[in-house]
Length: 385
Image (tube, helix red, strand yellow):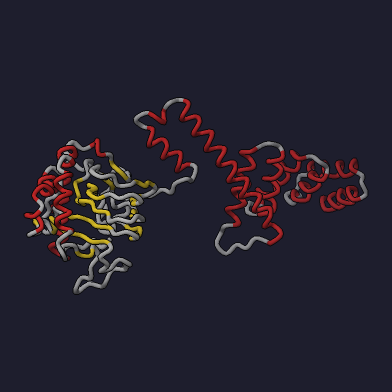
């Protein structure tokens, strides 16, 4: 009977008999039948101009076929007509997710409707973001102590940033804060170290004037397969070590007493054959250090910029910063990071590692023993960027 009522409703529509079409649709709705043709009912309701009725029928159809792309798109469009932005957004997003599934090929006839869906989702997301930004600004939270974290949370919510987590290539210590950058004001020792910047600048200038003092940061290691790094053995990214493998590097250390004094202020790990580690890192114009992860998440990397020309940038996770002469940058290098020198002059920073402040003294002692044991068994792992 339901098939007959559906045919009669369609025939009535075709001859312009809207009264009979409505009667047959109401009969279809009243029938208790698992095979009720909700898709056809929705199409008839749409033709009769009953948008809420059409939406109801299409939603019932989607309960049986939740991934039906045309029905998702038409339901979204009808909700948009009614001014139900949130409802339209839900169904448009569901349609776009179906179309984005691997191996799914949307019919070409739906390409324009999918474009409309994407345009709507983009515009609605922008309106939502503006609404939230205004709410945060209106209550003054954006300028408070938690403002940066709130803004980042909104950026993640709106998809303006991706979520980047610690992914060290060698050793992961759980439970540590997922922070890309730490602020210099959080560390009491930094002012004393930065006070020596003018002397350190003179020392690094003298070292740069000495032929052969810097070597490529990423080097071929005998007995090991070469790392897949485009800067392998390339002096565009070079290093001059002051501490390496837990020992001062001579004659470099003796020639840079102010720099060694500055490093003495920092809580650098002391681990036999591994730490301290400190160097002048040189990045020539036009050089890009590709995205990568550091070895450990138990440390933070410090950059004290000594030569900081414009158009140089460091990205850690979703955050980008530039180097400013004499102002230390502290970041978690176990989070994906990369660097550029797009300027016309060489950039040089003093680079060294410190313990993370959220690792206790007892944990540092235990980690020192663990790293020593690892190195005793398999040798020190080289960080190849």
